[in-house]
Image (tube, one colour):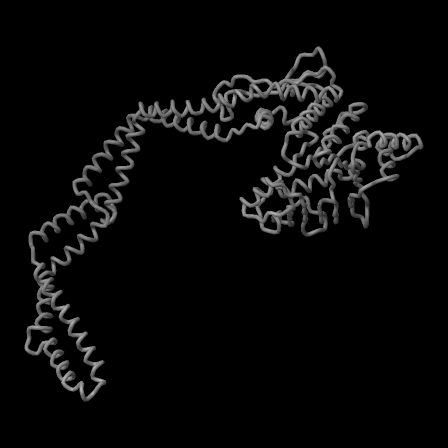
Length: 544
């Protein structure tokens, strides 16, 4: 991972290893900077405030191992798929953001889509989402592997038919008046029955009939010039050909000329045949001309009445017929009622199937989270997933989902939002995070100070849980608890320094005595005593 001019980091290049990694440091050192950078490079909102003071832009890139599912998403989106995935994001002082995926330009939405497959981030205020019905339902559905996309589509279809039925019932009078108007206009145009492209054909036919005598005279004159006259073209051509043919045995060059003349004679004869045929089928036909005059007159009259070009009357008639069909459907209350019932039935079938899965999964999720709570200082506590019939069918289903919790034995489960202790809320959120993260697809899990309000033996359990998650995932945790830090496979120290009147933050790996000193600082502050150092060593040995 590489950061340049990000917040108070000038330049940082760091490898995040597999297993459980902690980030520690003094308050205000910027322990969450790496997490903020990861969120930016996976599509978080761009903000010029992330640029280090005095710099022109910030530049963040992160390289991930590409799983088969990630590569499938990359291929579908048109990106190159490799063994690794490189994401990059920049922001300039104007707030303009640019992004790349494996070197190809990308959008922030594409980064977010990939980020959802790569990272699972649990923030220190994760408990707040537990009070939002949509987030609670989403967590249960994710645990149950339920997709509500089809359900939402069916709900929207049902609501659309419901609205159409309601509007049609309220507008029957106006719909009838509009229908009568359209029907009368359609009747007027149907008397003419204009056909597509007919107007151009009428104009062409009318023009020919209007000039029929002149056309016939022209054809007859051409025939006379080509064949009938004593000095006609055909006679002259035949005479010229005969002259050349008589001398072919003396001049071979005449052969090509004679062939050209013969070809010309054939073409003129074809022309004569065509002209005779034209004269046989051409007539003055004044009756047909009168018919055309009458039809074109009606056509023009309707075009003026409806303020449309004559050639558009056929299209206008088709559009009115479509409008009338739509009005008939809108006025068909029986048909609309049937469609509304069918749409609601399809929605109910899908919603009931989802409800069945939720009812089956809710106690399973509740037991898993209850079990996790026991090790987090909430012995005897209970977690429940409550499903209640919704007042009306929802886009998300037929029930409302809520979380209830009892912090200790003997207490009555209450809504999560009404649990008084902030420490309990954090531990419940951590129990949920651990329970659901084990089932997630993201290879990298991030915990940003979710252990707030936790201490003592519970902190030991938190550290062990995260270490356990790190056995087959990459886990990154920002923590202030030495018990959690001691359980980590890797330890990163965030340090803030003042240089040339500017504040800079650095991130470095600590091992050996440096790590002992950091754990001791977390235990007892800046003054390191032999006692805190010894305690730190014991914790690291126990956490190993």
